[in-house]
Length: 130
Image (cartoon, rainbow, N blue to C red; front, side):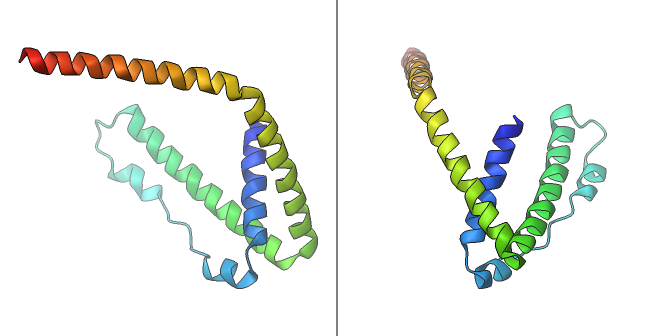
């Protein structure tokens, strides 16, 4: 799991490092505060609602962290080079992983397609009966 996070962060940093400095500066947006979202939920909120609030908080923290990393990358050419190198390695790992899992992915997609076809046939048969 942590390798996926590192992969995502590396790709994101590399993409941002590749942007011109002016584009990075114009795209900076202050993270939105989601702390009020929890107080706005009704008392009968389900666990999925609280999970969504927690996800919102985590995303806000991630956005702030990414923004800090982007600013550091924009200011320091060494960090920019390291981010590009990390992203290159991350892309290589992602390509290798995709190649290794292509057969499994194709099997899962075929199974999902078959299940969808069965459900569609059931729905059509149900509509014909009515």
